[in-house]
Image 1 (spheres, rainbow, N blue to C red):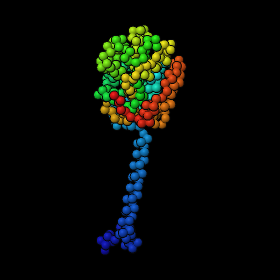
Image 2 (spheres, rainbow, N blue to C red):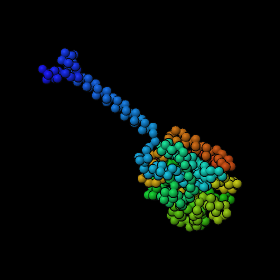
Image 3 (cartoon, rainbow, N blue to C red):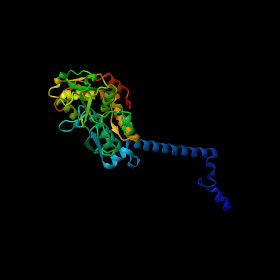
Image 4 (cartoon, rainbow, N blue to C red):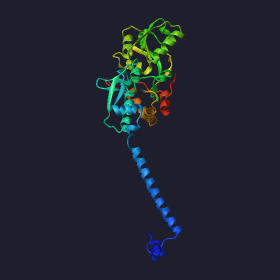
Length: 335
């Protein structure tokens, strides 16, 4: 009897109360309901965790490449130009320009991604000759100035979506009578060292047997100074750059931008190779700005309106090539 009593006792009570115990199928239904409820709670927790993860900045242990370097250093280092008007230049107070604005938009996105609103920004002036070595030596993290994206340069650096398409032409004194590149035969011509324009100019000189005396100088201001001092009859460079020098000269009427384009190229931001997370971040900023119409407004600000420090207007309307680029963001070189 004691054994039977013990067997009859259970979580459901005594033997007398056993008649109210659920049937086997009912027990299974209760267990299934409890499992379902547990799964619902787990799913809710997972969804909540996922949403929180999306809302929170990336954890340091998840970071790689440039983003990790910036996070660990507590500073993002920008390579900037001194006189690439109107892209990246010093206006007497700070670095400004069309490209510099894009660079700072990228910095804002880096701050959001890393959850570091007070991230420091350090600028280092670069030239056409030293910008790539400084990037490869980790002296700068990003360069958005007037750097041409070429297939050859892809061997050592990575490039963002293009933010400007242009023609390679020249600026000369109006009084010189020079109108096209054949007029430069046998004459001294200046360009900036380390640029794609220098490569194009030297190739044309060889192929066309023009016997030009080509002088390559440190940076754009040195090249324009050579033209002004009559040490060269023409300065061959990116069309918007020479328009910038013409517009900001005290006597812009003395100069003419001329010549059948040697070719068409694109500017892009430059960063280290093999860094997909950073590429995704940078390209996302540029593409959103272009397709949302912000890029065209930015273009008008720097190319069709007065710019600092002297309120000069370049009067360089948006080309159809750039309009097409903004509608279809891409990171392809044109050479």
